[in-house]
Length: 383
Image (cartoon, rainbow, N blue to C red; front, top):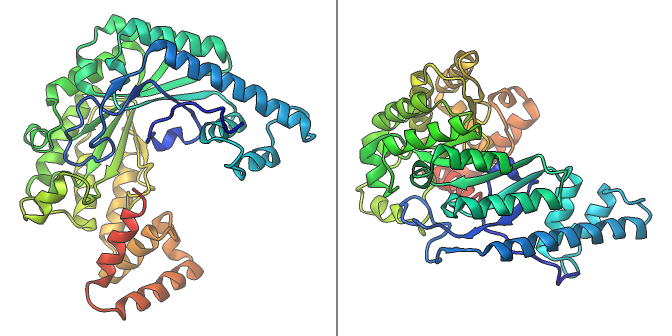
């Protein structure tokens, strides 16, 4: 069964962890963003409709094989934990695709994420054909989501997006990153704030759910305030269903790294990023979006909520962190980055706190500045 495989891309949103991953395009047609390394040195290409349909057929065959295995091992056709573990723990006999389908079925087999970076670049009629075939093959599917570039979406007619909605697209994930025009140019995003607004409004008008992504810290020390204020301005005009934040971490493989090395771009520290996040949230007005912090690089994972009713709650969490003494902040930062803490409430757990304090002591013995190096390495390990 190792030969039963289908093509999958490199990334997906955290919210699609247990979705079926179906690759519709390869890599990114723009591929110039300074803060991204995912698709660098990889050529963009469209996949043919028949090629994608063949992958869907292979997924159907894998589903059939998994159900046969369930009967063979005495699980009565059910997708049980022992069955899934058996498949996951045997990569020699089961391909990556086979194992991912097993997880997908265990989670209900209802969600699909279309990869890669800009699937709406396909002709609308072709994407509709793919969606219809997917839903005909798996009638149990309830949600289909995809990445898209705002530039591409802004060129689509609302009627085209409505066709995609009727064919099965439930949600579109768009990387806003920032609403500040000079910063969009600086990071070579290839889109303007107005195009972001136009694209977002079209998605909303079509009935498709919209997730907009914001990169905390992207403005650095030079543009952090404008980044927060102008991003809020753009989001206020779009009113997306979800605002998802990601904290900037620059790797050596990212073009932005060279600007950091030359001191042209100066990174914010954790406290400054939290101040920026506070200004962003404070400036969001007149929207009904849900603010989501579903990424491990975000220091304050618990800063989540619905606008407008939970805005003050989110700000109060940020204020609690900012009011902590320096030593407490350092303890929390290490505990969070090391996976010991999930929220500020965990500081009140003596056994967790002692564990982090002991680690801090060991790190401090190595010399001044060592803690920041450890924190940076921990963040890098999650990318």
